[in-house]
Image (cartoon, rainbow, N blue to C red; front, side, top):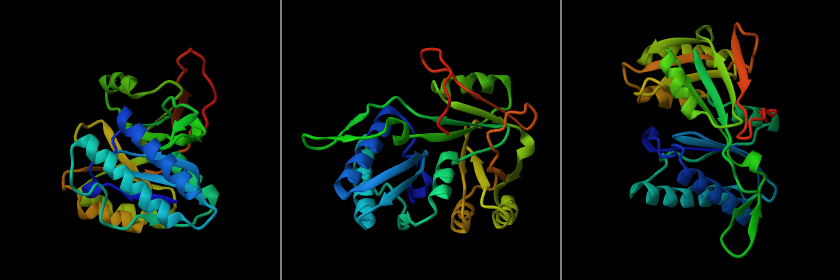
Length: 266
């Protein structure tokens, strides 16, 4: 699994058509160049996780090239000149495929809060530099899980504009997560992380609506709380399954553009 975080946790990968296209192109080009099999990418506003299969031992070259080209594209898009990614090394590790795929499909999450895996419409033939094209499975190329805090009817109306056709939408109620302020969340976060691999830590964005959620390890927790604001609203809890019992959670699939509800891939 390969992951990289944006410098200072800035939202330099926040989704828009240009960013989606840049990531897809850079990932496909790097994978084709170094013969890497891409299994499951997941892109959030300030970091990405990508599960790959390195058949030929070229993961180091792949990681360097992917992040170099993506940084150039995003800096050009945002009008930036400084480093785009954190100075910490790109994290690459070998993990059981089942855990990695589960981790990517559910990252990130939370309370009273809504997860929305979104898969934008993609062409089956993604462009590649040169005359050839790279064959990619559209359903596996780019997906993201987005989390929101809905505390009022107006938030639900706002949520409508964020949901893409065909999304899986889960409403997970407040008892799933405990809310803390700033560094007071550090101890419960570490205790939960020691108890389960499904521990989640999320920070409410300044807009009071979006939540930047992560499935952290100990290093992530240290980095997160080293920079956290004392007034930050932090949610700590265990990843909730896609329950649909009407009590712990409600899960539904949004119809596609043609009005048909189809099974969601995750």
